Amino acid sequence: MPSPSPAPPPVLPISEHEDEIVAAVDANPVVVVIGETGSGKSTQLSQILHRRGYTRRGAIAVTQPRRVAAVSVSRRVAQELGVPLGDEVGYAIRFEDRTSERTCIKYLTDGILLRESLSNPELKQYSVIILDEAHERSLNTDILLGLMKRLIKDRASDLKVLITSATLDGLKVSKFFSGCPVLNIPGTLFPVEKFYSTDRPTNYIESSLRTAIDIHAKEPPGDVLIFMTGKDDIDKMVSKLEERIRNLEEGSCIDALVLPLHGSLPPELQVRVFAPAPPNCRRFIVATNVAETSLTVDGVVFVIDCGYVKQRQYNPSSGMYSLDVVQISRVQADQRAGRAGRTRPGKCYRLYPISIYQNEFLEATVPEIQRSSLAGSVLYLKSLNLPDINILKFDFLDPPSRESLEDALRQLYLIDAIDENGQITDVGRVMAGICYKFL
Ligand SMILES: Nc1ncnc2c1ncn2[C@@H]1O[C@H](COP(=O)(O)OP(=O)(O)OP(=O)(O)O)[C@@H](O)[C@H]1O
Image (cartoon, rainbow, N blue to C red; front, top):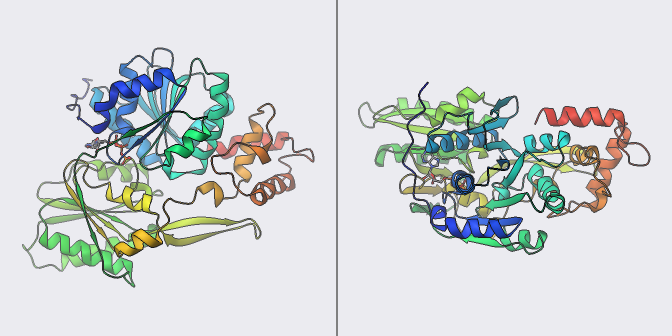
């Protein structure tokens, strides 16, 4: 089968800093790369290092906190290099491994990299590990940050680690990695104009609907990405939006197609959003925060951001999780806005006043590690058999509370996963394998 014809290489802000990036990577085991949304971190860094010979000794792994991002970014990189997906460029996500022995650029979820390190703690198959979207502060990425810190001591001569983020506090990460260099890549590709509401709406679904219909009626062609908090809101939004579009006067607007996008959608339905829009048709993509980072949906010009997200919160005193709708952080708001302006100028409608963005939103999302049960992660760390590891003193970028670490140890002891000395049991090892099989 002939290879797909290569897309013209984009001149992205990051491409203009290729020499500087390569010089920093040549000279240091760890480099932090901070770049604005759409500057090219996810798609270009791996290609730059591949071009400069870093795949001669091993593959480049690029982690993503979300499956849909691992698939879509690897697809884009394969397209840019003009190779079939699964050959030199591939991806590995839960239940799906699209790589071969020839794969030298591999996109994978952070959970899959953790699973790989269970059977191969030194991750010798990789010459470069890029932890992408570190600002998301997923639990798995935070554990990987700690593991990378150990790993580069053992593999200082043959492993490079890059940590990339749109907004992560570079100095803090640099300090964590003993003062490693931080490269700030300025510049975005296209401008995104931001509009704020004067008040917080009482009903964000209704307000998003009104804004979407307004765009459809008044704005030139361009797809609309609408952020909702979860599947239930998305289902409601999709059916109401379809109904309102049906009720518009015939011929008053171009055609419309409404597509949901969330983590529990089967992959074949998720990828529908990456297919080109039918001619003369505006697509409305109604998504959770799976669309917040790394994704480029070609055609998206307008973003509607309700300012909320559904977040799991663990309470170690009760041992219970709650699922709460909470305000997003400024980092998340900027990531959401950054989904527009990637292939052309865009507009972002924030359904909250600028004062809320500036004064009420937290600067960054609370790291998942500080709001999760750590039983699975502690079990994982124990199963690695790392020498001299003390879980209560494991080197985390933002350490979880002692209470949640002790809670995790207690829970693991109660289910016989560790013994009274804190050593992992045979049962614990089986459990760790099962946990990470499903990541
Ligand atoms: N599937 C795609 N279709 C069209 N253009 C794309 C696609 N994927 C990437 N691009 C182009 O490449 C640019 C860089 O994308 P990339 O994902 O590498 O940026 P990034 O810096 O990682 O952004 P973010 O931090 O927002 O994830 C986009 O702004 C867009 O112009």
